[in-house]
Image 1 (tube, rainbow over the protein chains, first blue to last red):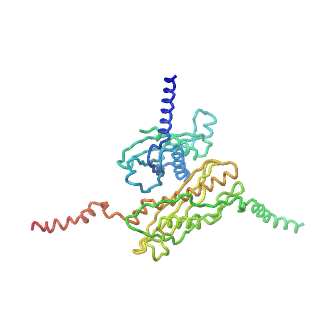
Image 2 (image 1 turned 60 degrees about the vertical axis):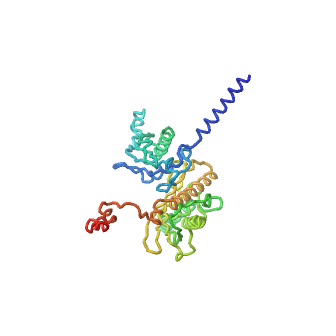
Image 3 (image 1 turned 45 degrees about the vertical axis):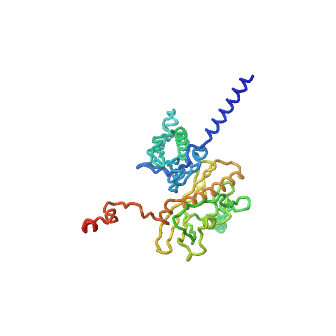
Length: 162
Length: 227
């Protein structure tokens, strides 16, 4: 009986510790920068601001950092080692085709967007994440849906980064 | 017969204008929101004590109805002009941090704020997102030099279907966007560079670095201690 109660107490303690560790933000602060479009990428003009807003909002919801610093804001030198900068660019955007999507299906004719994402540590410029991410959406959907999907993918990458 | 036709031709545009005017939402206490800053904004610490004065806030949004933030669902309106809201927010934030000067003469820097966007950006479906885009011209009172500092704040609160929730979300969106824009300005690296330009920063070009280090004089004249 005493053994069982000890095991239960240990399990409760471990799960509580795991839950606390899971909820703790990964970084002290994150500065999100606007993603510029590469040459030839034709996206609606308000896309860049929407992606920026969506990225900030998604990272905040996922509790990846204690503070979310605006673009080009100063950060205390003491926090620089645990602060990161998220930057990137939109490399490719395909509008997709509703006709192809209807006739062929299976992802053909889908709207897609490819972005290069880079996460660097503020203090020593160490690159934590350097990756190309591609997201897809239905051709009928608003291009801003891609911003939402991209923000979610980036948040997932950051969550699983070292 | 002709008289009747003429009457019809005259009345038709009037009726069209009247029906369009009937669709236009009007501000009422139920669809009006008030934007105020919920949290105190802590500005960056400057190398020397400085005072700012908010001279003017100018609307550059080219929006014919700046107080209407949403036309659909019976409309959503602001209780004040965006310029007035921005001016109050700037003055409030600077006053709380003891950075506000009483007048332009006693200030170190005079601010002219241009509002490029205040309200909602085009979001996704039922989701609204707040956006405040400002351009602040910072004028050094002593030297008369002016510098432009941009400030942007955005906020996404999520989708809402009920009118009550739409109002709540839009209010939160714009308030947060304004707060972030203000924070972006007060804690921005650009403002720091304007107020306290770093003298110890190395120059961009090699020639400028040579000029700064006075190496030409050294090469021509030699080291005086060894002469």
